Image (cartoon, rainbow, N blue to C red):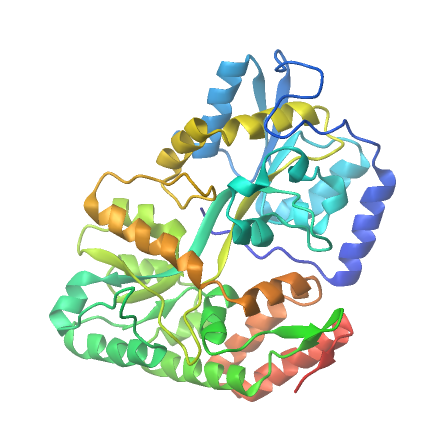
Amino acid sequence: MKKKAARTMAGILTLSMAAALTACGGSGSEAAKKDGAAENSGPITGQTLSVMLSEEPGEQDPLGNALNHWAEESGNTIKKIIISHDDMRSKFPAMAKNKDLPDIVSTTFLHQIYPDEFVNMEDVVDLSKFNQSALNIVGKSYSSDAITGIIEQYTTTCMFYNKDAFAAAGIEAPTVENPWTWDQLYENAAILQEKAGVKYGFAADVSRARYDIMMYANGGSLVEKDGDSFKVTVNSPENIATLERFVQANNEVMPKAIWAGGTTDNPVEYFKNGDAAILLSGSWNYNTFTNEISKFDFGVMPSPKGTQCQSAIIGGAALAIPKNGKHPELAEQFVQWLFEEDHYKEYLQLHKGLSVMNDVAYEPETDKAKEDFKLMQNETNYVTDTFMTDESSSWRNYKDNEYRDALKRAVSGEITAKEALDGFAKQLSEASDWSMAY
């Protein structure tokens, strides 16, 4: 999975736009039966499936290849509508109002903020075949329990490391059975800088999702349940301590300018060129690293333990079917076809990624890749209940980028960790009307 951007809007804007879309839409065709063709009809042929994508699929693009294979096999054709991820936010509502929706959308957020516009996937495929945590995070509406998207790309946060640098520093990589703590990671990062000739012992994507695995591992959260509502907990003592340690790490073993906002450099590039020995990023990088890293051997290691547990965050992209597209039944037919075991195996072998289906897995060719993918798939077991609670709150509907901005201000030294989290907690509380726990 390619990394996708955050999927949010301010709450009032989201609600008002969603209401506008619902008001302007007409009634769509009845959903197809689970794992079957449309009721009282055979397979549809001779039609055109319009597909909204965020970029033109390349020759090896797994979804593009699946669409072409299906079209050839079913006797239909494909029309691609290319709209960038960011532009989808403004153009999809306009398309809905103009009754000019595509038949199917590859998206990270549209089906979640506009659930009334999309078919419930429970009416299309047997959802018991899929990883339930992935369905809840990637596929579920922000405002209900409806699964309005079926996962196309499934990813997890994970840790990459430079095997050559570890050998030069005399460091043995952690294992699933014997993981490091976060303190051990920071300590070993300092040793790597001293003994392995790297500029930085550790680097992390500039993403609150990457930072938050530290927070969850230390028992923190952004919110907690409060009856039928939530309380804001982002400025808890546990979270303040986590951010203070992260600020210290940026000053000692990380490329501080990246998280402090002093450069737009990508930490992934720092890892690829050998400047950073450990990278906190995500599973979507694995195949790029395999193809592009030649100056050293790299590996995957388990996420470190915090004071409470290990932690990972899952995400991805979904296929969603607008109710008011021209051919919703045709879109349902494609989804049913894609998630037949043989077709999904074919998709995964080209995608070279994690599987969202319970009994189907990517099968790498090399022993190294088999071990690495086994470890990355295992990371999905570290998703915490606190992360699931945070996601269920849809807090990003109220505030989103403000959180990362607060973290960056703390790293830069502009304000303290406590001031950063207290300030964001107040913003989130005021925007959501949730009380503050601290």
